[in-house]
Length: 256
Ligand SMILES: C[S@@+](CC[C@H](N)C(=O)[O-])C[C@H]1O[C@@H](n2cnc3c(N)ncnc32)[C@H](O)[C@@H]1O
Image (cartoon, rainbow, N blue to C red; front, side, top):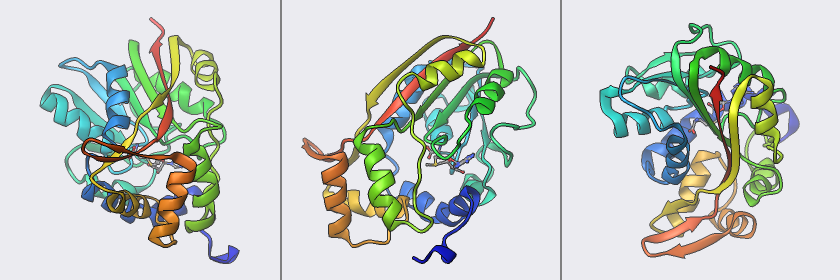
């Protein structure tokens, strides 16, 4: 794709990609289950809690919370791209607002959940501060995103950068960055850990189809399969195949 046809901003990129991304999730709702479970395990939600899912995309994390807790936990979604959040419909309250300035009431959430939404943001500090503002004292944030030096990062910024409209120039998380940033925003008891969260499928064909849709890849199935295998790694499992995805997870408590 020539440079003049490339979307110029992340919002254009995500508006353009939202349809295929959400379709991938609709067709393979369990593929990223390990990723979501690892995040929700860090939150340890209780009945009566209010959670902010930000940026929520098509509501993948929000849907997992409702599946696990039903109406006992209230979820509010913040998503900058209205096109991306369109599929959420009326399942959740949705705010199409910047993640660093949501406009939501201070101290109105017990938890903030953020999955795979920060690696296109240069300055994450205002977002960490916004999370601190949104949480009650003792509230918990759980965040996960791609880490520097991993196969996941290599796939996103090499193969994908070449084969997706708009390219992919992720700014990945160095070890210690979540800890430093969350502590600077006022969070306490911050922990972070690089975590293996394999994406699971019945077969390699499904894996390639999912990734092609999720990332709007403009390449042949063989090229996608080879790139996934060479950069991220594919292994066989009892129930099919797994893509060796890994993300940096962090958790922190809002100051009392
Ligand atoms: C990979 S999706 C993740 C969505 C959802 N949390 C999930 O796990 O499916 C990336 C999300 O980050 C948001 N995003 C991308 N770049 C952004 C930026 N610079 N500022 C704020 N949000 C951004 C997109 O709108 C989208 O919701």
